[in-house]
Image (cartoon, rainbow over all chains, first blue to last red; front, side):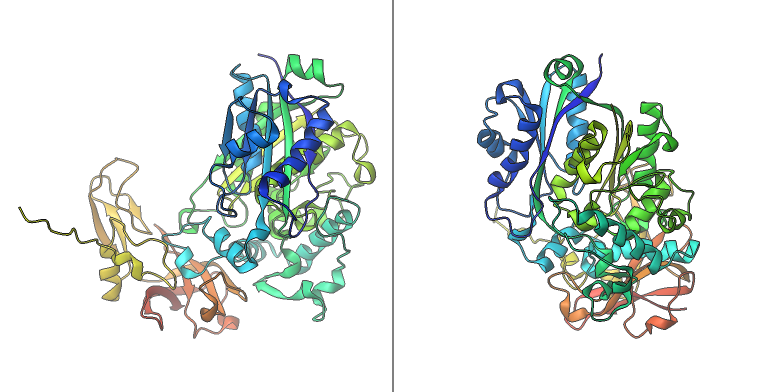
Length: 388
Length: 145
């Protein structure tokens, strides 16, 4: 079997309150992916639609989108692993192509979070955890990740200041990413300024500045077998490695609280499959739904030893000019996190980087890139390694 | 043969500030909680211990469990105090969620409202006690050992 490549990527702008329906939102990402690939709907022989459920009324969006995209009568699949849905969608596309069932597949992720209030959204997201044994205590995503932050601080001496540096980096690039929802600067001083919303506590020890921005958005990744990729695309980016893992949904069923086992395991699988190590990665997108999540990703992916993630950010090693640039598109923190669209958007960023088309965000001549995408509170993990 | 309306065993709806599950095979957990006991389950066949309790054992595929009581001290793994709450939990604010390590199992819950935040630290010993919320709903909370 040959290689599997990515021949087109697209995403909508990530915005608050998208003025349209979910099919129209999804079409924006799809259209850009198709235009990037310079192909027509006749070239696509299956679609994979990805989102987290319960943000909108539409049940089974795959069929609805397939029609709106002009992708009927080709088969369509719906994939859901919360915030990592579209990375899992890329994994499904890869396996369908490897199995020989399809040649070219459009993976479209979307989420329109603004259909419900922020408190309702927290309730929905909280129910992505254990609804029988945890949600009745009043859980929400920031509080779960805050527990990881507290444990990391207790074990390794990581501080809130270290976490703030990650947000400052994200905002540095959010300002130059025209598709980001949060385009403003965030300074280190804002975290200690009671006048700044960034300093407001959300769930101790995490503050507003430690949390990603909810957004509406869509993304698209066009995946093809080697023959089609070479025939249709001048600069295909190849999928070199894939990893995926799951763990106990309830905190009580876990053993590690200073990192995410799913990130570590998915990373190990992807490195092994690609035949590379952490040292070979030139640019990375990691799942920074909260600042602590990026810190843990540094360590879980082997960019830093456990407990030493803070040295990477203090030394600015994860900035564009550093030894391992991470989230130089603003990340989930500033670019925004429209759940089902996030993984595809991360893949898009790495593909543009590897093609040398990332504009102001371009890292110098990267050959191998990595995407780390987490679903729920470390419930699902996907790592995808891409190369030129 | 008279038609008798089947009675639904929805005892679990009493669990937590807002409940999302009412029917489960381990509904007896609620009766024990009403008696002030926090119980887990242990597989009679293979001895695997579960907290939270479950009806089915994934190791031996038997569904024959016995109850055991969560007793003694657990070590605080981590906690977070919430300043915002999901829909339905606003009246409880502020409250802290936490996780205790009992060695063979762990317990996720809330820290008791009367424990001052500055007296809580990772690694400290705490105990799990049953709790009745102002609404009459039941849960369990952690107190200083």
